[in-house]
Image 1: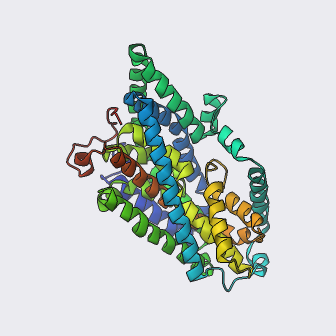
Image 2: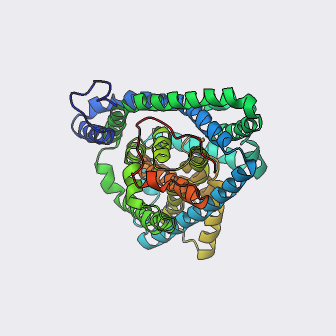
Image 3: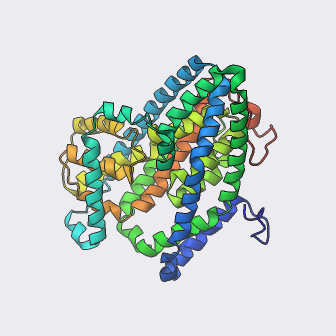
Length: 439
């Protein structure tokens, strides 16, 4: 943190620092847009720092967590429960997105002629790239998506930041390490040390989070301005209303069922949540989220498996957004979809939204493919592009919250959630990790 590195004249929590960075970025974007537009490199540098530590952190954490269980049957059981939970929750997100879109009608009152008046050549060029990526994905079979889970080289997977491929390698490596017994202990000890070092590394990188947040917000406001909020008020309001309903109707209810104090969970993840919201980047919040969820009482193996897997298969906020955005485009184009068509669209999104998180602008790519499949105008995406960053802030932060809830639910389901740590009774130590626990 800045206070720990003596770069700040007085002690402030990381949450306060990030919030201040958010406010300063907004003010700069409003009152000094030319200066603010030059601050984007601050955000880029911070996100690159995050990306450079994710691979070794994830590999070390997940491997020692899996090796610590010592039982592949337990891992298989946990994996099955995880994917069942993911499917149920993302289905609920899709339903809420469709219901809110039908009730609020965010696309009514707008037409595709609006596109030529409010979007520049850059937006249309970006739309072209999105539709090309959507076309590539649509021609892939389910076997292709499954095959892509398995890396030909773990170094290549690390270099490309492919989290799913890294998870697959780490799971098999952890199982092999557990099977090696005493001969694998030196490797286990080495990875424990690497995990400790990487979490210290996270602390140092987080010291620059306020600057990264300030740069991201300053650039966003300088480019879009606050006027864009009025133009898109109905779409923005509909999405954030749907996200709020999902949090309180689904996530809160799930936590109540699992006997997890929802308020305590929100307090625990406030730093990574604010990072995800302000940077609109899931990667920016992942290391810190994994760290705080371990301190919340979730075993290392569950955090290491559920969190990164959820970033591809449990994108609650993005899934909800896809359902709402697809109906937004249909309404804007004056096309009425029947209930049967909407249900079919929901089933399609349940499949297509899985496993493509590594694709740039993944949500828009999936949306483009869905619009094409249902005969809706892909040009409608260009309307959304003007405000996509503000929409992304909401859906990314809910993605994070949903995956944090998932780790606690799976831990409770497996009977290994530490209630003392969850209640704040167990001692916490900043920047440390829990010892491997059996699932």
